[in-house]
Structure formats: C-alpha cells, structure tokens
Image (cartoon, one colour):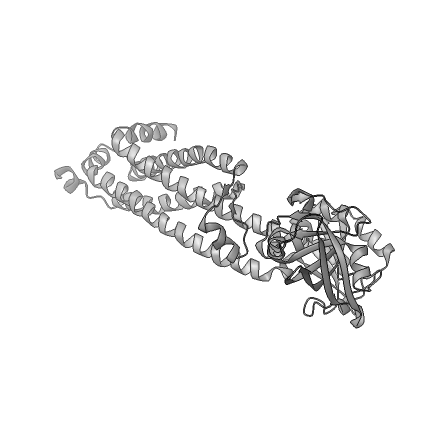
Length: 407
C-alpha cells in the first residue's frame, strides 16, 4: 500500500498545472460553501438567542389557555416552595417572573398601543441582559416606580428620560388600570418588533397598575443551554397541576421563527447544492481528461504484469489525494475569515436595516464556527470525488490492452 501511495503522489505532480487547477477549484468551492453555511447558521443561532433571551426564555410555566388568549385575567399564582424546587435544579440558572399585558401609552398628543412587561430587574437582567441595551438613562432598581421604554416607541411618543408617561388599560377582572410613570431609561432592543412596542417596569409596579397582586402571566426559565430544555420540561410538567398550568418550551412559543429558519435553510441548501453540482462537473471533467490521456500508460502497465485492481487503486488514491489537498486548503483559508467575522459580525446599513426590521430581524450577520459546518462540507466533497472515481475504475477493469497500446 505504501508503494501504491508513493506512485499516486508522484503521478498527481506529473502535470502540476492540472493538479493545481483541480485542487484550487475544490478549495475555493469548499471555502464559499463553508462561509455561506457559517453565516447562515450564525444568523439562525442569533435569531434563536434573541427569541429566547429577549422574550420567551427556554421554557415557561403559564396558566392553561394563556398562550391562546393573552389576557390579564389568565394570570396565575403559584406556590413559592414549588418554584424553589425548580430553581434548585442544576440545569436552571434562575427563574424570571413576569406580568405582561397591553396598555395605551401616551405622551403629549401622541398615543400608541404598547406591551407592558412587569419584571424583577435583577433576575431578568441575568438572562436578557437588558441593562446592556440601555442607550439613555439608567436601569430599573428593585422597588422602582419608573419605566424603561423601547427606543422606537420612545421616538414615536417623542419622550425622553425624565419625562412622564401616561398608561391606561384594563386591569385584572375589569379594574381600571391607569398611572403616571417617569421614564428612567431608553433601551434599544435587538428585536425590531419589541423595539416598537415594549415598556418595562418592575413586577410590583405592574401588579399595582393592573390590580393583580402576587399574580403572574408567565414564569420563564433561564437554563444552562438548549440541550437541557427537554429534560426540564418533562420534570416540571410532572410536578405541576396540568388542569391549572401548562409548560411551553421555547420551540412551542416560537413556531413561526423555526418555520422561517427551516424555509431559509432549505434555500441555503439548494444554493450549496448548485455550487456542488459545479464542483462535481469540474471534478468529473478532470477525471475524464486524466483517464483518457493515460489509456496507453494503463495498457502498458497491465501488459507488463500489473494487476488491474492495483492500477485502479493507484488512480483512486490519486483522486483521494487531490480531494484531500482541496478540502484541507478550503478549511485553512476559510478559518481566518470565519474567526474575523465571529468577533466582528457584519452590521447591515442603509436599506438593509429597514428590510431586516420588516422581517423582525436584528440587522446583523453573525458567524458560526460549529464543527459540523466543516465536517459536512468536507464529506459532501469527498462523496462527489468517490462517485467520480467510478469512471477510471470501470475504464481500467474493462480496458482492452491491445487497443490501448495502439492509441
């Protein structure tokens, strides 16, 4: 085998130009495929992260029926001892209580519908890191009676830090909910839809506003990672009353996002498939030319006693070496680019910002360096090469030596 490998290595460098062209075509095709998948997977991961951290959490406990009818009357109370048991689990970083409802927000002559999100400032910030999104003012304190406004909503209402916001809504069981709240800070949230509608206040202030003491619309879970979601959902579901409560994973709360990602991912796979078709024709063209040019050489080697199977093995090794060089080169030249964009994601500007906002996406293109991005592309290229190897193998096994020597 070592001898066959040496022969194959020498053979591929007999025609340096052809070898370099073939290796370069594989290398740059793999480079573009890896970069495309890196940006694609990076964008999908960012969308999921925004959905989880900014709103849904990894999972939520809700009153049964709340998800289909998000009404303050579908809020609930829950045993604090049970919550302590949940928070004591190793997979759970912390629990985030929330009271969410709708309100009219007004400042001067401007009025707009807004989502009121009552939170515990410290626990909420551990997951969503809202304090990092502050563009003006300060973050909420534990017993604060002020509010944080999303930036686009603040711009619409023409309100600044220190101004007073008027909120008017319907509270628990039809009670009137109205109040005046000073604006403590303006936040630029990553999700455009949230940036247009969200107002944050402490959960105590929200419970007072909506006349719903000790009530919540959701208890969100901040976990160590996505791999823990299934186990925690199963455990929590077994400890709560299924007649009163329901447990929803982030996937169940973000079905539209996941469907969009699947659709976009399918489009990306099709584009890479087209790229691989071009690669396949390039590889097969090289193999076809290399095989037909060497018919006389093959015939001589068979006529002097070399077994056809060993000759076919030499040609297969040649193609494997070309593929390996191309794959390694593609990975090597893609790594610096991916590392750069991993730490410096592309910030979209101009018209692209509005386009992304229309689709409720953050105008940024992050990079992912998941190991399977490299592995799957390398496997795909190798499969194409293996398929191309069938031609010279069949040609050698069916070779007519006499005709080959005359060619």
